[in-house]
Each structure stands twice: as structure tokens, then as C-alpha cells.
Image (cartoon, rainbow, N blue to C red):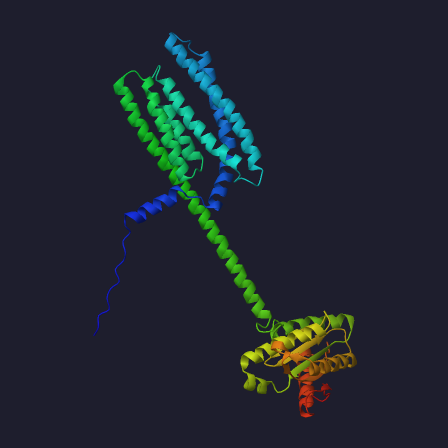
Length: 404
């Protein structure tokens, strides 16, 4: 017994991981970016409002409470006040533009993108500046920590942009820490700042990944819903129409005739049905093949629709039999219509390049709304009339047979 060799699974190599990392960093799916832009513009309005309030509190506290006791402390307090004045002014502008852009449809335009990334850059930059000012009086780097957390937690920023922003912010922070005179504290702050930067990047990437997965899942759900709707529409179509000719099928024709019978009962107008059978259709299939027969049925159905009124309904009853509902038409008028159709079919070519010459036999019967089984009664009469036309040599029209 021959042993079937096992397929070895290929393990991802370093190049695969690098490719995945590159795709993640340069992620720019238009739908994800557009949705992120909408979210960011809404959040910028709330962020601006909160930042202005916080800045006002800082200005009041550092300006009015506990006067400075030294020149260094005065510089420190002045630096904090000026920084928060700048933050308040900038955030007022951000809130105004964020509200304006969020009401527009083009959230992907360059100005909206510039506002989002510019705000993130400003926040990181002010975090660096205030942390440097704090070194005049304290050893805290809390402003840099807060500045790294705000864009990471509140703004959806593409991974590659996040990496560039935070690396640039840390470079500025590393240099700003030379404001700290104590070498040990400076080294500690620079090391802690590196950790803060790393946490900010991880948080931002996590937020972006979650957002990207959410958007992709929403797209998948929408695609599945569209597929389901298309499938349901297709099933509804197949339930009512013949797939080959596009004409209504037996079930749909019966439903339409039932409605017509109800209408006839209210308005007492005459209506008829017409049964049509293509003569010697089996011979056509045997001679030219079933594909040619299908093309013939299609062109025959199109011809009937083109030659009848808009209010008339043409259906494929089965095989080479077609049935027509003629509303508000007397039996005499229906026979005249059938004769006109018969004569036209006899002189017209059907199928590819109109290469087939055929004839058809017709049976016509009136609908009676007060019959218990109106369609079945009319169909039996029309069917009997059609077979009478067949027996009479085909290519002719016969009315109902009253005794059927």
C-alpha cells in the first residue's frame, strides 16, 4: 500500500513578519481612514472643550494662589501660565475647525487630516515643553506622560504616523531633560520618558487595531447583507419568473389570474386567456439540439411580449407552451388577437439570426369570475381548444369548447 506523503506546513519566516509589520505601519485602507477621521473630528470638539477648561484652571491656580518666593519659581509659574494660554488658544481653534469639518462630507481631505495630526503633534510638543519647564522646580515628567496618553487614548492615528510622532516627541523630551541639573534625576527622567513613549505607542496601536477590526467586520456584515439581499431577490425572482425566458411562471400567472378574477367580480368586465403551443418543437430539438431550442423559446417569448399590450401578461406554462392573460378583452377580441399573433409567427424567423421558421397553435377561452375554480376551468377549455387546433392541422386558432 503506497503511503501518501504528508504535506509540511510552511512556517512564517522573518521576512513574513517584516512584511506584516510594514503593512501594519503603512495601513491606509480608505474606509478605515475615513471612519477614523469622522471619529477624530467629533472627539476633537470634546477634547478642545476639556483642554480649555483644564488650561483655565491651571492659569488661575498658578497665577493667583501662593505667590512665588524666588526668581526660579517665578520663571516656572510664568512658563506654566504661558504654556496653558497657548494650549487654550490653540484648542479653541481646534474645536472650531473640528466642528466645521465634522459637518462636511470630505473628512479625508488634507485639511481635516492636517488638523488631526497637527493636534496630536501639538499635544505631544506641549507635553515636552511643560515637562521641561517643570524641571525648574520639580523632577516630575507627568506632563509628558499625560501628553503621550491623550492622543493614544482619544485619537485614532495610523500606526506609521504614531511611530513617527512619538519618536519625534521623545527626541524632543530627551533633549529637554537637560533642563534638569541633577544628572541622576535627568537619566531617570529620560529612561522613564522612554517607557512612557513606548506605552503611548502600544496604546495607540491597540486602539487603531481595534478600530480597524471593527470597520472590517462592519464591511463584512454589509457585504453579507448585500449578498443575502441579492440571494433573496434572486430566489423571489425564480419563484415568480421563468429563468430561461424571463416570463412569469405558472405560480405567478395563477396569482395574477386570481387577482384578475377578483377584479372582474367587482367591475364585471370580460377577460380571456390564450394558450399557445409551438408546432413540432420536439423536431426542432432533435434536429438542431436543445440549445437552439432554448434560443427559440427565448425569442418566441420576446415576440409575444412585443406584440401584446402592456396590460397583457405572458407566461411560460411549461415546455413549449405559453399562456397569455388578456384583461378587459372579449372572446371575439381575443380570437382576433390570437389570429394576428398566429399570422405574425408564421412569417417571422426565430432563434439565432432568425433562422428558424415555425408555426403555433392557439386555444382561447374566457375567464368567469363566478366559477369556483375560474382559472382551471378556463385552462381546460383553452387546452381543449388548442388540441382541437392541433388536430385540425396546426397553425390555427380555436375558441373554447363549451362542453369541456
